[in-house]
Length: 419
Image (cartoon, rainbow, N blue to C red; front, side):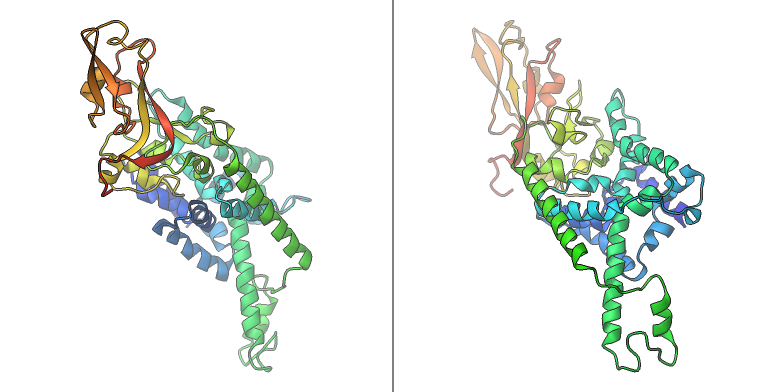
């Protein structure tokens, strides 16, 4: 069953498949990702409903998904060359997963759900995305680093991730405990002859009370206080990240939320990088600061730009860091603004007849002005979308004379009020 689940998860990431919505849906199956994304974006999406089946399953079966379906755990088990069921938890290892889960929810409530990058389905998605070769761009393999780290950790300490560190596993454990407590409460509300461990004619209540799956035990006050404190700590950390000023904005994929939120909402899964047909989306390695490490940015190589009618990356994001727009809406979205360096421009500086940027602009955002009798380009910033067509075609060498700078907050151009 787990091998079939692994095959089903891997299929949408294959080069011949390219199903952006299904790729996003795989990560959204995790209730940790779905809830954090909804809280962080403040705009719950229908994709978050995919986490409900696992919530219901965990309430009744606790970590059944972990032991019977989870593809990440299956790969880790094979890599360790040992059976999961035969391994005992490492002695002295603390239950870090539940605190990662609680801290992550606190950060999400503050609008910065950064810890979704630790979700096992997100990590596996990043690994599959990194396996697809991108011409001349080694950085795309960075998305595989978290999964490779899990492989090494699991080889050294088998099952330490699945049993003690995984926040998705901790979420299922919490849900199972809540379900057990609710069942116990309802059972105690029955007539005295059938309640609180007293068997009825079938002996069902006694059997359930003796199982490991349902042992209702209300949490101690100390645990409740720790949960509250960790949630508050996560909220403070999330607020601190969003309140801190960001560096100069880079060019984000179309539909990206505000820059100070994007770096926390982005799961670094690599879906948008994988599905981009122009191969212009790459992981960031410092241009947006430490907070933006491995988040997607646009790099306009020679001959490649953000096609005005392409919206694949908008459908591939599982956390709403990239909002979903129709191709018509996306075409009106300004993701950046082109700027001309006149000291490098062949027309402005060398008085050559060059209007390549104006010829290739799909939005007519580059106009012609006369300078010393030569036609020179000038950007109409109010309608420029930042697609990069001009930058990708600029013949100036070694540096291009026209480059696109990103916006901290993307917005539609004002030429259409019916957006």
